[in-house]
Length: 497
Ligand SMILES: Cc1ncc(COP(=O)(O)O)c(C=O)c1O
Image 1: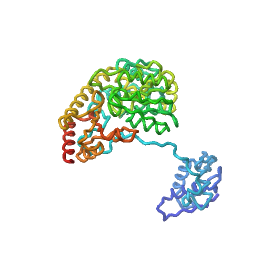
Image 2: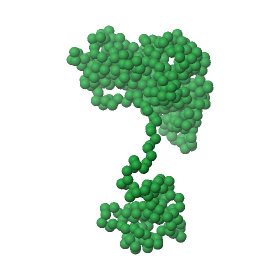
Image 3: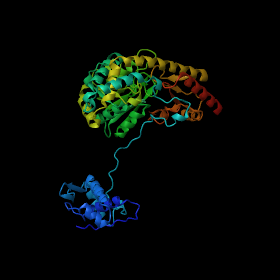
Image 4: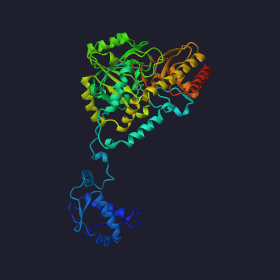
């Protein structure tokens, strides 16, 4: 058989590529039928005046891509099973003068609309490299990451991994880590939970996604604190939830204002309200749990930075107080170790354990084994508790340094959230401009201080709660940077008036 092929030796395209494209085109257009025998390589080479090797290499590539089949000692044939996308290409090229010059809009049916709609929380500061002191929230001290210990454990786990890296593990998390977390939570947070109730997730955001998958869809009533954390509010919003904001006051969530209508879920940060920083007092915790029991709502407790408490003793988590299985607890290692490890966990009431494990399996088949086992080793060896004691002390000193610096430059400052955590909120006095204006003036002076919206917070009652509140993260800054930053801020504000 002679093939009607023409090559152009003067072209910039190699002869091999031309031959490949020409044969492929003939197959796709049906000119070379499925099962047709191809000419011998020597014969085709002579016909086209190209070397036999050019034809051999072209056939090999057409075989590798599934257009031809080679049957040893018999010959080379057009494949009988073209891939579906090739047939699609054929249909298009059949319908006109060639694929490339057709207007795809005329022939392709409209793409399905993207169903996801959402906005992302601001946890990455795009300006960080331009600032000489950046009070961005929620960042642990980069020098306090337990690098040596982590590296040693990681290498040891790698060396003894056996089949763990080549098999699937429990989608809910490896047992050693769930056990280590359960053991830690009893004394640390007053939570009595079994390892079976724990699911390992990718930070708090992974926990929020899993819970939303279980409990939220279009129209679900989700109560949130106002102001609240963008990561939670935006996530529920993306699932179509109906968000019901309840204001916080100086004690945290105002439980007297909880809605009487049916609510399905409430998202709260009782240890250190995000962003305002209040610790929810015991009587409000009890009121919240009573309300949840009466309305049938689940309470989602985000305990993101409770490891850092500088004044008074920490209150037990809501999960530990609850008698009715209403509370879902979420913890993260993003604040205590670092967001780079992307590890967190859910502690679930019994009725949600299996649905959550199933949802997690569907989502990603579980978290990376190596990270989990390294963390499990870090916690169960006692290193985590030592690490926490060490950084708690460091952050405490940094908090004191920030409070002192603010007092020194601005007098009797009104602050909230200083009892614990990694940030404080300064309620601006009337003689200073609004928070957004202060943020802009500070940025020009090389200092990052943030109005609530820029600090990953959201106020659903408009911007009224955020106009006069500035948020300062201090955990990642040395004391000298904190002092320098507040001095620069003070000078910049003086110069602006
Ligand atoms: C209220 C709150 N929850 C949780 C997180 C932590 O998120 P993740 O664990 O996904 O890193 C943050 C981080 O800024 C936060 O502010």
